[in-house]
Image (cartoon, rainbow, N blue to C red):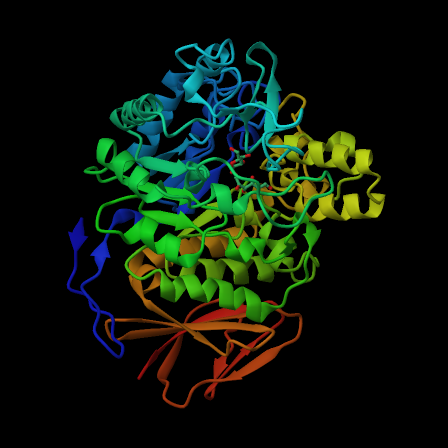
Amino acid sequence: MLHTNMKVKGDCEMEPIKRHWWKECVFYQIYPRSFQDSNGDGFGDIRGIINRIDYLVELGVGAIWLGPVFKSPQDDMGYDISDYRDIYEGFGTLADWEELRDKLHEHDIKLLVDLVVNHTSDEHPWFIEARKSRDNPKHDYYIWRDGKDGKEPNNWSSFFTPSAWEYNEPTGEYYLHLFSKRQPDLNWENPEVRDEIYSMMNWWLERGADGFRMDVINLLCKTKGLPDASGPVDMNGYVFPTEHMSNVPPIHELLEEMAEKTYGDRDVFTVGECCAMPLEEGVKYTSGKKRQIDAVFSFEHIDMDAQPLGKWYYRPWKLPELKEKLAKWQTGIGDGWVGLFWSNQDQPRALSRFGTTDERYRVQCAKMLGTILHNLHGTPFIYQGEEIGMVNVPWTSVDQLRDVEILNFVNDCRNTGAPEDFMWQAIWRKARDNARVPMPWDDSKNGGFTTGEPWIMLNPDYKEINVASAMADPDSVYWYYRRLIELRKHNLIMPYGEFKLLWPEDEALFAFEKHLDGEHWLIAGNFSDKEITVTLPAEYKNCGTVISTMKTHGLGDGKLTLGAWEAEVISFEL
Ligand code: TEU
């Protein structure tokens, strides 16, 4: 751990900041099946990523979060693992992973492994054994209950299916699965399970992994006795058990144990995907006395556009809400840390959700969102394709979809007679496949992603929105992202500066200050298609533009003018 004597100026002086490599670099998320195919089978692979390393180096990112590449029947695209210590044939071999690791390390780029340990695949040898009989030595690796009145043991729904329970004929019991029925939940109360997972984690650390992105890590513990959930009943008659599966004790002690037995003393990075996590819990995960996890992904800004019944039920929102949700974590995380993201493999494209897809403004809007992301307090994660301004896909038929979640949703809609319009709005807005279509590298057939038949269609706009055309245009999102990433390397105020939200009620302007050690920045983004002129606070002296999405910067005469969906960062003295 590096210490610096930098202090943050403010009403009270803060402790010296703890510097870490993972606070200062920008991460890039690769969704392996859609990044680059190298062998013409239509499916992205590790060799394809190796072939694209120059792209990552030139972009300037310091670390990669690689989606799961382990042995898997691919029911949930690799989040269903049947062997944690081997690679799925479609992605390549362990030797390929090692080569990728070495080549990234040669360029000083770190590599995070996706740790998926809330559940395994139903084809994992543990589960194959566990389901055979009640007295099988592996039985207690999973969570089993007898049925109640000829039905499931409780009213829990799962993320992907009506019920979170599946009947198992040989034992006459049900097993719990918070995700698909092919993803049985592990029983973390069983010390043998914990030892198995810790030993697997050490195996990857010894192999040179630089840390873990931890899938649904705050869901490992469930409420004792697995009581019925209370809350809105969904279209299938079940209830989502948020309070019984997220942040349930003894999750903090469990993560302390995990750290102690694995990464606790290593200079690696762990970031937990934590859905349904209040701020107080995020603080505990990342800044308790003992190390648990280093950073969390909060989903508050993501869940903002969902009604209590879930993501398919759209809830309109306004900018003050988004600012409030982000600002709360910015100031409240204290000595802890957050991963910053607009999108990932589960979410709609950032432009389609938070910005605009109007072609007149798409490029500046993507730059504006990038400006906000890179200047917030925390570590930015760019999701592949964000750096060229990709947008959601205009799906025309359900046959084009591949994801287990959306296919189950379509089934549920059809079985319950839900209106077609409701179903299609949900698909266009929220289907995870929106972010999973192949990376378009150029305008050739299949965007240069594969010479074969891609496993899922490309976004039909790939002839215009692709890497080659972005690289050829100095005003593209790509070149602006490079500047942002570079800027972050030289300005500690970006990761470490103290955040202060300005004009919280403004419905078009997202503006905040950052302060570090006598340095002061104002970051301002226009979330509308109308020009905005901001009168700068009177105490600002010697203002200068740090970076702007506009060709001619908007600073002048005590004012900052932002065109539609534009952003600018200025420095000032007090
Ligand atoms: O996601 C879990 C999660 O909480 C959500 O993001 C969820 O997938 C989404 O809300 C459903 O719309 C993680 C992975 O990121 C996801 O890809 C996996 O499917 C899931 O866990 C199961 O491993």
